Image (cartoon, rainbow over all chains, first blue to last red; front, side):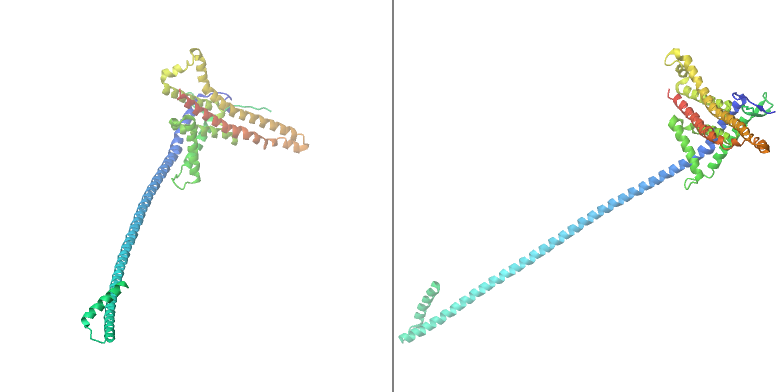
Length: 168
Length: 248
């Protein structure tokens, strides 16, 4: 004959056992499940944090490098610009110098040519004068048929031609 | 046909301290305990930080779910209640589900649920006393006016009793209804099949064919749904009561 408890009853020993069971089970669940899993979760969290920190560090250094590179690029551009400017300036100076020299030479040549022309002209005028006076003397000699005091008349003729030349 | 609905079977008595009866409740709750501890050991075997196994995912899910439940209902400062609530929920749920495989659920014994409820009551009271001191705890009973003191004491005592009986009643009623339905189906099946003529009717009327399949529908509600709900409600009340106890 099996014994049964009645349907609604409280058995003291079961009551005590159940409380003990629950406390033991709580300890077991804490020890075997929660502590172990939480430890792994904590480790994973720490690893993730480390990874993030490393990534941040890498990003910072990359940004720093980028900035450095940009600074360098900017200074290089500036330097190039100043080089070009300097070269342009130098070329300008040089061309000015050459132009100036050429202009001076040309004006010198022009002046020389002008003076040459003037000298030629004077020379030609002198020669012409002499020739005309010679011609005039010989013409006059022939006309008067007598000896003219050449020197006296030459002075007269020269004077005449000079006046003629000035008037022309 | 006689239907007898009783409590736990008493296997034997240990003849010390006036006789300690070893009942189905105790044996089955030990089995539940062993199952839970075994599950914990199985799930947490070989935990890794990376490349986790499916088993570990389940273990982490259990822990984080339980911890979130406790943190949400009780607040961060009661985070250390996680294992207790998890243990309570697991034993309640597995005990309730024992009826699925035809075993006696320890939660259909009032001793079990009352023990849990009393333990929770002790925790509630301890939290209240820790929060507001012994005098503050006493004084809490006279709020909002002195006249309400008896009612306050009653409502305080009602807490564990209602928790215990709610859980117990839901599970035991499932068992009772299942037993009645099984008995009814056996009678019906012998009645209907007994109408068959000759030897066939004699033989078949002794086999309760109608018991196949039909009780499974009830089992879905009483064993699965109700079993889960009661475990959840018990833990929900536990966390809320202890959490509220700290707010006064």
